[in-house]
Structure formats: structure tokens, C-alpha cells
Length: 282
Length: 248
Image (cartoon, rainbow over all chains, first blue to last red; front, side, top):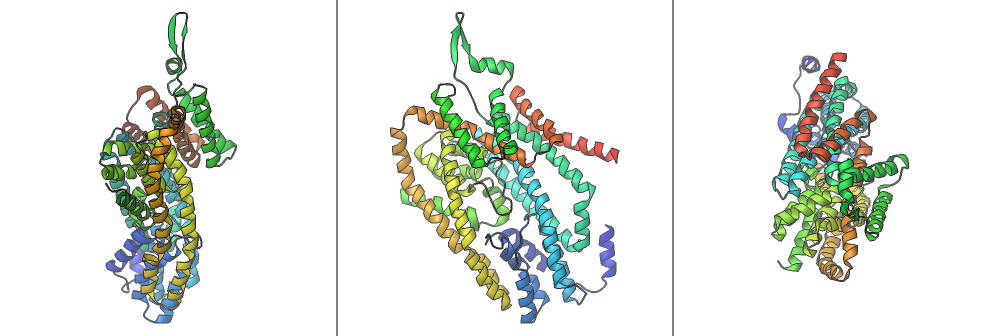
């Protein structure tokens, strides 16, 4: 709140960009940031397309436009939703530059470079390992039962998340400018919220593991005249004992042994085939 | 449906979702490729329940598929849409389909790497327009120029796989011993451990590990719904935040 008031009071002069310009920029970003994804510049061209309307509005000479567009073509990569904040802040800085304030082009570049990493870090973990996992967990459950609500819920939920987060992130970036974005990233609140989300994510991951890793032994025999089914014995000791063992093995290989996911995949294939052929699993 | 037409539709969807769709939709359609692909293919093949089961099963292998810095462990559009379509057209069980889809997903990385490398050409063209101050053409490059290579890289292989593959898989399944099909199914049950394991190592934090254990045994012992687990998790998270606030 404080920052917002200060920004208004120090800038009595009229802003050059209106809401329509900013909406157009945000929309292009959330639609086409990764349309021309490539290893050389990643989102570079996407960023340039997003900000191009702002550049056209702010600068009328071909020379200024060329300089600004080329500068925004450089290597760029972040997380789309949370990273929209950087685009917002960039719009604010280009606007100040066009209004004749002392904003060096290099400074805009270094801000983009300084912020894209941290926001990708936060954004990737929140979007992909928390929001995605919780939504998928619920949706997969429903879909396995043949319920159409599963994928529909996932699409609606994730799309709403992307639109809402990127919208607020973009416009708060525009209002706050550079300094405040840096401060926000370092704040305790950000850390507490990420921690809290991690808890939800962890508990859902655990639940997914028990419900979806399927390992069943078909070993059975008669002991002292009564039929004994090994799987039933295992279940009575600890349900989902074998899925837990497989998961432990996978984590051991990935984390302790630093094996690649391809190696783990092949290991699982070998285990699956060998144990099927010795009539242990089925 | 006509085989050629079906292959064209599946290949078009695979390309569109992989590279052309607006990004805010791709979060669900691409990262949840198999799950959503299950619905799309279910509608396409006229058997939604079967489609959903295949898609949801394949998705389990990709729970931990996290795109970081432009790299992905597998091509989710190919595994999800092409994989589900092939599984359904061959009439495989969901677990066996999972192994087919995982193999396709790995091969699909070739398509992805090809376009991620070749699209530099479009960027260099856009550089020239930017240097001339031509914002409109920069946009054209990102909008349309960007899609030439991806279309070739995704549409052609997906079309061929769908057109030739569905018959090939059917023939193959007829001659393969039943034991191998069982083994494929068993392996399909194991692969979700990889997806979940990758995810756990990504969010790994020793102090939060007990929560994963709680989630695991809630389902193992009580067989509760995931929605219940998520609600419980949210409550614990709020309590955690409040406790942290008190500490200052």
C-alpha cells in the first residue's frame, strides 16, 4: 500500500500507457510467450512480441523502436504466470524512459536478468509441483472412475489459476516497479506461503503414491492344509508395503545414486519383466 | 471413423497442443496431456470411460514431469494424445498402454529437440525486423513463422505413427505371448513410482517428509479420496502458517 501511494505522489505527470495497452501486453504474454520457444533465446521473441505494443505506443521514431525492440529480443526465460510481474515492471520502466526520466536501457536489461531466475524458481515450484499436483491428484482419481468431471476440473482449475495469477502478477509488477519486486521476493510472507503450499503438495503426493503405484504378488500356497495368499499376509502386516518399497527404491536411485530418469525407467522394466516371469508378480 | 481422417485429427491435435496453443491453456492441455488426451480421445473414439482410464493411467508416469529451463523429461503431447489414441485403437488395457505411451514420449523428445533447435532461424529473422523497428513483422514471426518447423516435426511423425501404428500394434498383440502382455501391465503399475519419485525429489524437504507419510497411509489404510487428503492438507498448512506467525 505504501509503495503504491508513494508512486502516485512522486509521479504527478500523466502516464503514457493506458489500461488497454497494458491489457493487450498481458494478453499477448500469456498467449504467445512460448509460441516460438527455442534453445537459443527461449522466451526472447515471445517477450518482444508481448511488449511490442508498448514500444509502438511510447516511441514514434524508427530508431528508438529498433533499439528497444532489439533489446527485448535477447535471451529471456522465466515462469509465465509469476514471471509476468517482470514484464509489468519492464513496461513501467520503458514508460518512465519515454517520459524523459533517468532510466538507462542497461538498467532495464539487468532488472530482467536479475528477476527472471528467482521468479522462475518460485513460479516453477508453485505452478508445477504444487498447483499441478493437487489438481492432478483429484482429477486422476475421478478420471480413473470414468468420471468426465476429472479432466474438466483440471482444465478449468489450471486455466483459472494461470489467468488470475498472471493478471495480478503483471499489474502489480507495473505498479510496483523494480525495487518493490525485489523486496517482495525476499520477504518472509513469500517463504511462509510457499512452505504452506509445500505441505499440501507433500500430503497429496503421499496419497497419490499409495493409490497409484500398483504391485501385487500372485504367490499362494497351502500350508498345513489352509490356503495362504502372500498378498493378503503382506496387507495384514502393512498395506501398500510393496508400492512403498518400489517408491523407496526409485527415490534411492534418483537422489542418492543420482541416476537419470531413463535409468530408473529401465530398472522398473527389468523388475517388472523378471518378477512376472518368475511368477512373483501378476 | 476413416483411418486416414482419424490419423490426421490425432496428428493435428498433437501438434496444436505441443506448440501452437495459447500458453494459458497449455498448462492444462500440455502438462496434463495424457489426462486431457484421455478425454479428447475418448470423445474421438466414442468410448469416454475407456479413454479416461487410459489417459489417467498414462498421466501417472508424468506426475513428476516438470519443465525447467526449457527442458522436459518426455514429450507430453505425444505421450498423451498420440499414446492414448494408439492404445485405444489397439484396444490395449490401460497399464499396457502406459508402457507404449512412455516409449513414444521418449521418442517424441526428438521432435521437441528438433524444433527447439531449428526455431532459432525464425528468431534471427525476427532480429532483422526488430533492427528495422518493424514491430508488426516481429509479431508475425512469433505468431506464424514459429509454427513452420513444429508443424513438420509433430504432424508428420504423429500421422505416420497413428496410421501405420494402430494396425501394427494390433497384429503384434495377436502374436505376442500372454506372459509378455502381463509383464507390460505389471511394469505399467510400477512406472507411476518414477513419476512420483521425481516429484518428491524435486520438492524434497526433510522437514515436510512426514506429511507425505501421512498422505500415504491415509490412503493405504483408509482408502480415502484424494480430495479429502487435499482438504486435510490445506487445514494443516493454515495451522502451520498460524504457528509460524506466533513465533514471529
